[in-house]
Picture 1: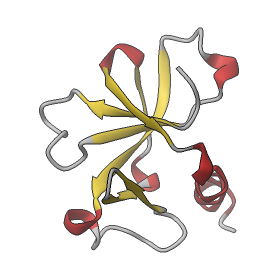
Picture 2: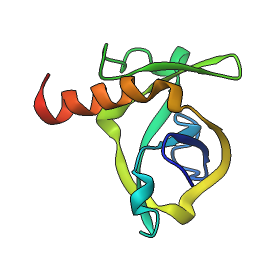
Picture 3: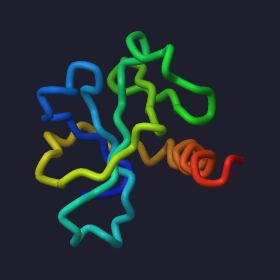
Length: 105
């Protein structure tokens, strides 16, 4: 597993709204049984929840997703589904969004 990898959401209660989960936890902590994820929702569905800078908009396989950083959570790694892709090219946008939550800037 590597940081900024996107996985399918296996949770039947949330996968309709958030079909993908972005693993943002550092690779240095891969031995932990938990990881921190940001849910990704199809932009067309969650655009009302997307706040500029806090919710980076990314594209995966031609579909736009909003990363709802304000809903990030720790989950068991076993709950991650199939690997979809790695979006480390968007690293700075996610670091900025997390910094906004923590420091307000």
